[in-house]
Image (cartoon, rainbow, N blue to C red; front, side):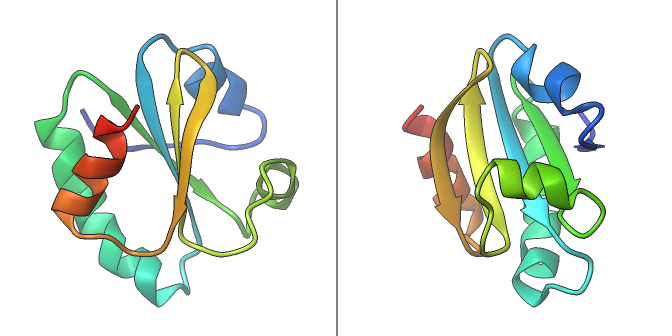
Length: 104
């Protein structure tokens, strides 16, 4: 499954209304650690087809980032059945992402 981009207008449909697990990546185009994480997220989205991966550009969606208290980027949130279950910040290895997702 490809990583989809979400906006303040589509976030509810893309994340909150979803059954199962959704990993949300709050990022910015200019962010170095975000650029490091992006290919890892893409790779995981191809491998972990039983869940959904969503990206939110904080520069284009400042209200949404504020609503979810995103103060540092990249910030990752794992939702299960529309409820945020985990939040972590910073670039991680592929194994690190898998560990965070497995906690949910």
